[in-house]
Length: 323
Image: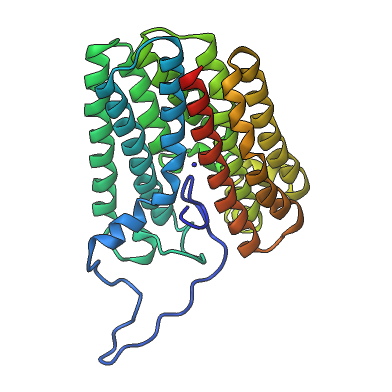
């Protein structure tokens, strides 16, 4: 869960950047310029990743509405936690990848650290601030609901920081999809329901499945596109381990599995079947993943998958809320 490449986790590296042009007086355009506006920081936060954080909160809250009551301020706090964790993870990935040099060659939006737009220490500070915002909102929920949520929060921050950070980043060892399924699926969705209901329910567990699988699909298509550059740089993602052909099958399995998950939920909450109206939205990204090998085609598949996740989860939430 990149803006147009590694939106979900922040590791796109598809080719060399265009050479910066020499400016009068010896300056280089586009290289190591100080940021002139908040636009650089906004781009560094990778706003197109944010639906992956919003979706589980929507679905988890809808589960709570179906099985009990919803407290408005808890919804807001859960959303702040999810969004701040995602932004913090994106900045942390920017910092770690930039320091490791894995974003040195890429096509697409510049990364703050690798491009030299912002000093690494400032990017790291931005990550810490975002994680701190998530921690404060999470602490508020923990005090109101269950102090054991503090342990969940610590695990989430650690997962975001260590994806590409630390001495042995798990994102470089093929465990990214598993982490996404756990944290963007079960933890975020069931957690959003838990802060409302103050208990775990079977429906929350079921609803976590399509949410998590669609988040995984985002990462799978992203890593599919980056197989060659990841392998060359020593980043052994699951896609690198599986190879392109089996990664395409994994993507299809994630999408189909998510839709099957909706069907299962529909057996106990019939209005949830409205989420199957998103099936036509799946057609384009599935076709692109199956047929295209070029970066632009797979970037389009990534964007289409993000749209599929948002539409499916919004419809699923609507169906659950009225069930």
